Image 1 (spheres, rainbow, N blue to C red):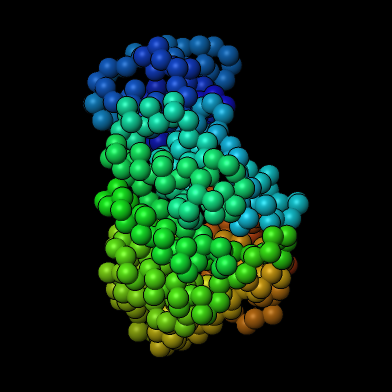
Image 2: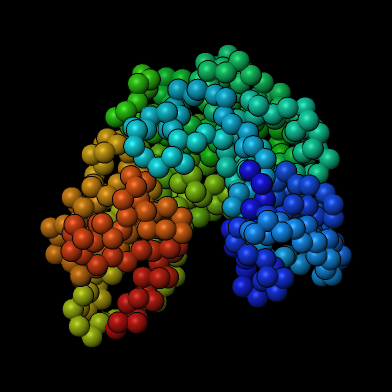
Length: 422
């Protein structure tokens, strides 16, 4: 796909140049770009020439002067301007493969592109990393990357990813080590496959790569009712064993779900280091609890108010603790209503996969003034749920008012809301 502009930053150089949505950036300094990596590299200069194809087909050439590190303020439709490198694996635990038909088309796209990993933090398996890719990574000193390792046992990784190239993972990671390319590692734990002794082997191999490995996140496999592979869910015993094994190694963290399944308290912030893989559910509950603890709450509201938190069961541990504190505010009543996922199956507990019908069923009969939901339920920059229906539909079916929390790791928005109506 070409370098199409989706918007410009207000007050930026791009706005001053009247670059508009739909324009195409053909080249920078007579160099065509294949992705945002090229674009960012080429824009690191005091003088540059932009070749722009306007929406009416006219081509403009603009010469400009700016500060060396000054951003032009162009927002692109995609981070890559050529074809996204597709995923060639058929992982036994792949969530995309265990979705039903009828969802948004973007939910069925499987990419495995090192450029998106570098630019946006998506996970890659390295199974399609070519020598040309390696040369570019080395030449441009790219990194860190986010790598789905899962196991360093070549035979087991081929079995789990169903790709003959999957067995080269450790070889590629050793190449990263040789050229000082840092990465974050992810392990999706599948009981009976890469747990126990196999997990020990993987963590030991990663430890040999020393500081090249910035962090290791272990997350439990997610299984929907649409899954055809014979996979087991992580249970209490497996969670306890995994936590014990992980505790032997530096920079290794288990996701919050392991502590909940093991019936252990969420550890303090120190455990998570820099919260490097927060969006994988590693430390999200701790960050939310600590943020709430730092907030000064109003002692009372001027009139009675009923709030209800509607979220996934995975967040109930933290939200229950927060609700207990909020209920000490005079005239405020807070309830927690976790959403059971009939759509995906009972083992799916994260808020980001909640569908409209499950949400409607949960909140339609509760007595509340406002229902609070996290923004991860919705498609970014929209009010659309993953099943294609939107928040207006939910409001119509429930008759409820909704408050969408944008920063899911902070209670700032809710506390400010309480102060504003106090």
